[in-house]
Length: 279
Image (tube, rainbow, N blue to C red; front, side, top):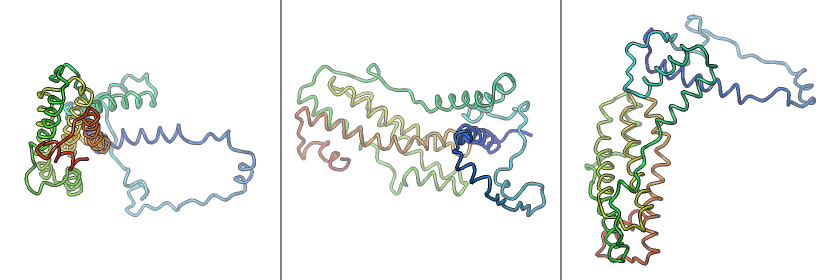
């Protein structure tokens, strides 16, 4: 049969779970003699096997039942998606016939981890200046605040997690269009952060904040693919909470560094109101 997304996910994730269960199970040789003697006299109570629809599959197995995967028939699997790429890799690894199941799963896991690694902006990507005077630092702090508030979202825009959950639970891809303004906002903020003059003493903090903005844009763009490339969405969903926390930390660290450099904000500074809201 042709490979479909749910079958692929069941195969890959199921394989990982089963392999993990095998390697994490307790070693029976380490069980104490006392426990072993007690176990020998205990009665084993089995759950009755039921097959309500008489299809040969026990009821408890129904949620996990998937069609057989024919790895010789990968026609129709899109290699433009992470799921499709992993399926092709899985087919290639298994067709070679010289790799143990745990080795195949390790290779697939490595590919998954690589796909979740974002490109990082470095010194060469930003506009570093040698001026670290109070005037330059104040101008920089105000510029960062103005960028962060420059691209407001449409009125009544829901939180990205709410949009994602609504679309997934209702199986409605159209709802994901509401993510587009959020993605666009993060990308525009990131792009502006790459352009403004950055005092050299603020390089590390600036890159940290810029890379977090970029990561959040990629996270939410991954949410957009939940109905077509679920593995990508799953990976970005797992990253999102830490990236969201990192945004708050990056903003705090940046303005703390400015404060430690002697910068004080007045009501006339854009940074003053921004800090009041964010920190």
